Length: 244
Image 1 (tube, rainbow, N blue to C red):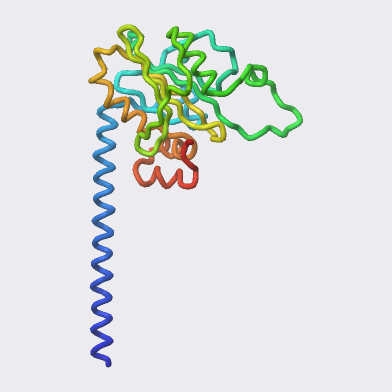
Image 2 (spheres, rainbow, N blue to C red):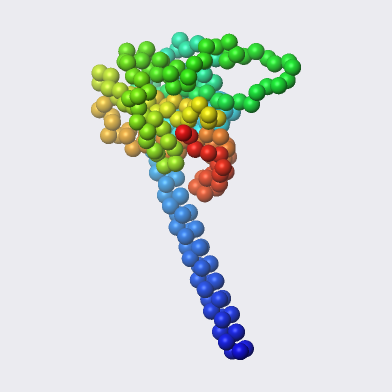
């Protein structure tokens, strides 16, 4: 009996060691994959904007624009400067140095907890006319590009773990790709508008895809700004939910 028991214990130890080794190899493989993916991001994308380049980190919106696109020096939304103050919580543009295109334009609304304090300071958002987020975004797109786009023309696409509604407009010699992230019940609704010459599509399509993949909001965005990547960043967003 003792010999049988010893044999069973030895077998259990071997199995345990094997399982431990397999688990270690899986973690190592994931780590190497994360490192390779991070290098692809760094080779093709800019770093996220700094705190003095807009309210992205403050509003927990993590975005890495394609290479060579930097925040506009004025921090303004260059696509349509005549937006009613307070209509959106974030308006920003990224452009190539000394060029107006290629470019990335961002509009966002954030669902914030209600302020129950007696002394509430009025903000532009309190008096702005805010309709449905997607409708307000498309009104701007249609005004800028003299188009007639509605939400029915958009298709759902998934980039990594992010879901978007997407539509591409062809405007003269340019492509305009509009991505809408988040639903009305989500904490963040964000519009990402990429504009570039058709001649540069082959160069930019892969970079835009990586930008959309690495985009995060909420706790995952906070983790990314803190330097977390891979599993560490994903675990930070556990339970947060996914758009749509």
